[in-house]
Image (cartoon, rainbow, N blue to C red; front, side):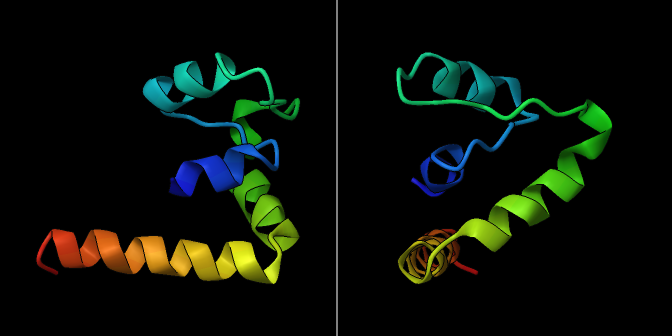
Length: 70
């Protein structure tokens, strides 16, 4: 769920499992970036998230941490 929010903003994923999954989605349009730019790319995508997306990400992260007992 968390990664879908990022994918909808064109996030490029380093992890092959995520990259393969989202590349199969008709709506996914990854941005064209170099591998060396992934960290800066994530920050740029983070800056584009709206209030609701940020709140949903916080909820998902809290749920994941609680589920893991952290």
